Image (cartoon, rainbow, N blue to C red; front, side, top):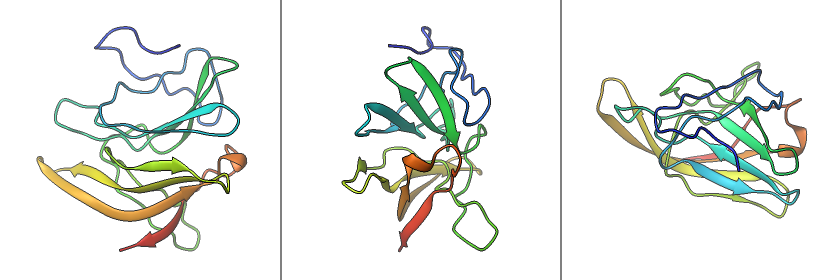
Length: 149
């Protein structure tokens, strides 16, 4: 497989939507993962920093080429969710430890999770449901909120 081979390795984001041999997601604990019907692997979020900072980045790993692609989300930590509104690109924000699955419709689904924001330590539990349409990536990189409780 492929990734950073030392515990202090940093992420290499590259250009969003462009697969490249040098791209690597951040080292993460509690990251959310899926696999889809095309044998691509998906990775989102996770705890990535020494003060429990969480990631919002969505990554795709192509098993045929061995390349990672940064699809969506920020390279910054602890990014807040942006809920859908006209003219706004929505995304679930940084989180870890969230249940996720690949549905029969071809959508990636994500529910809730744990987020941590400043002031540290402020740990919140999310209770929202999102979906992402991987067939449209990277041309359309919006997440869609299905339900917010």
